[in-house]
Image (cartoon, rainbow, N blue to C red; front, side):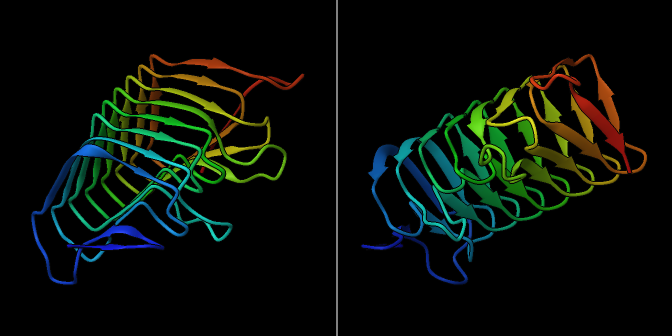
Length: 193
């Protein structure tokens, strides 16, 4: 791994199972931690603020089978971008201009708080996860009533509180035990694929 002015902490291609923990990353132009070329990386107990740009980069970019745990991400372009099989757990993501979390297939998001994610009124997605995603025990509040939460086929949204926005879920997906609080006059929209 090395430090870069535009990208903060960067792991090199082919690196596996690297752990970055206990610190603060602030004000990186493109991305706070760029570990997209790493498989099985871990990001733990970090605060990442004001990273990312107008093309949607942000706090953390991770490769497949990576984990983000106990982190606070505030005022970033995008919160977490992760490959297939990624996990985000016990994190708080506030004021992401783009998605709070964007991930591939079979990702797991649990016990997280995503507040004011997405760009108000522009239909930018607050949370996007691929097929087989599992989201549980999270609080999610998008910025605007038109911001989206998109889950692929065979995904589940369980025991969550979702405030504002539109939820789109793929085929054979489930929403169980959730509280949906709509912010628009029409309330929350839930659309199955």
